[in-house]
Length: 295
Image (tube, rainbow, N blue to C red; front, top):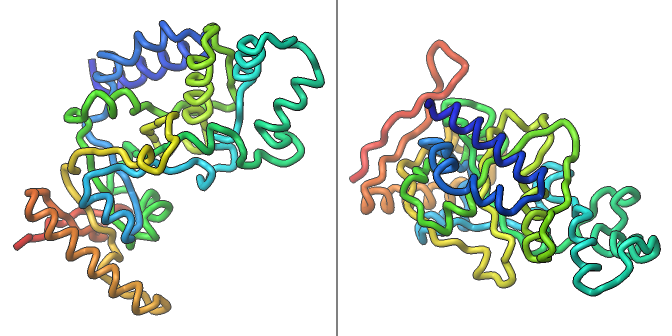
């Protein structure tokens, strides 16, 4: 079976498990089916900043809070499952309309009237790091996520990841509608986990071109929890404009970027990681990587 077919089958089984709200079914698709579905290479596009370079040099993924994401629907919905798990746990009347109203007002800060404000526990205590299947030859990911081609792209081989990262790594599911299903479990911890998975994985089909995978940790309660130890990338690619100074760019920004690139090259040389500079193709609308010699 091809990798693409394995991925499509896995995503369909994952979608079915979420729609059934069944933790047992979900666990069935988190082992070998997922291992067969994970692409050979996943990429992370990022600007060149002190934070991104420090994360690379210190071998960690920084898990972002979702409240800064560029999709206004991304991770901004709390499903009804949490409400029913809570009232069951507290032995409260589940269909008390005033109680429901107060709960959703607290959890979602007026979902309909205030346009998904950032005040849910999912947004505060969940850490997310995003990757894509889109290879660096494609222009759009550089433009959107790597400071208009001044940043870098890190290529990762997740076949070498540990069990913790493997468990957290999941593909985004793209749908035409908001889809949230109640968990069948009476355990509020399981129910909350399903809320997180649904909320962080289901996005509009408008974003399907990103071919996204995510590491999702729903248990980030301290700053350390947002820093996930990881492994080295299999290669590092520098953006087309990473070494160029723009006409309207601050000289300090350019100088800092050169310092960051030197640090990256030194790190890559010590760890035997190939580094590439992206170049324009001569006859196609795509970018091509050119290997950089490291001392």
